[in-house]
Length: 131
Image 1 (cartoon, rainbow, N blue to C red):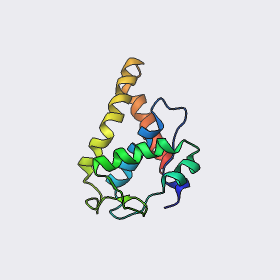
Image 2: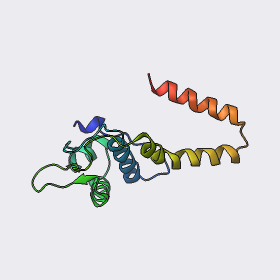
Image 3: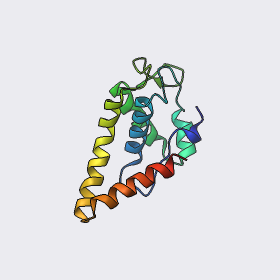
């Protein structure tokens, strides 16, 4: 897989880069975009493509390995772990999305925004990114 298209990070985000990487890999595996045996970019390749320190990538990969999402192969590139041979159920994927939506809902309440406008904005964002 080409390192430049593997993940996208937001350097202005309050979420650490290694967490962004972990979450994106988890979601891609859950959706079936990455399947068992798929090779992932090396630490060096991804660090260079994202212009971040290699230890940041190494930390994310190590945590994903401990979770059983990735497997390390001695002398070879890391791959998606064997148990991830197909996409997770829609219910499982929705549970992965729940924390993000909960945070957005909390922020909308704090800002005292009308529910219809928030839902409209979310729908607009979904439609924009689907193109």
